[in-house]
Amino acid sequence: MNKTLLILIDGLRSDAIARTATPVLDDLMETGMVCLSGQTVEPSLTLPAHFSIFSSLPPYSHGVMTNTATPDMSGAAQSLFAQIKAQGGTTAAFYSWDHLRNLAFPGQVDYTLVQRVDSPKDQKLLGNAAARHLITHRPDFTFVYLEWADLMGHAHGWMSDAYLSAVTQCDQAIQKMAEAVHTLNKKVSDSTSWWSAIMGVKKSITFQTIWTTSPFPLLPMET
View (cartoon, rainbow, N blue to C red):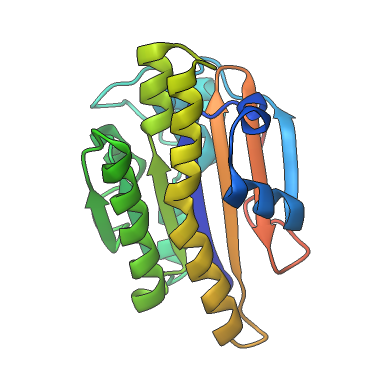
């Protein structure tokens, strides 16, 4: 079974990447597949967008329209976590915003780390914890949510100096995970490869890269 690492950088604008230092993202874009002009969903809120990513459904179909702690999800929506578990796969999730627990029902995520992010150091610790888990447990699907750019964008303005610094700090948080994937790809057999999908969502501007050793995308989604 191919293995997937999905990293979502909340608040990441595609045009911010060219305005600040992002060496890890630059390398992934150079070696992977990139789309800088995708469109996020409406309403362009964190929880509805995540439910669309994980269910391949627009908000009016999955029923989650706000950033609520108790979303009323449609019965037609089945999370990616549920589908992976139904196939006997293993899963892990690392995030700082507690509402994201609603992306999966109890028993669908084998390992979860929820860590409050109040500084770039906190976010880097979250990314490093995910990297260690990739090496030690090799889950089939790992989801990592990075929030710092979104927090700084709301606090100081999009494309402000503080926001652009936060984008660089998100890039730094990815580094250990990228190194872990490189290490694992050297160790696994020819029948298994590690994929990394990195998405950044802000309003109508979406950045997405699929970094993979295989020629086909693993996570097709309706758009």
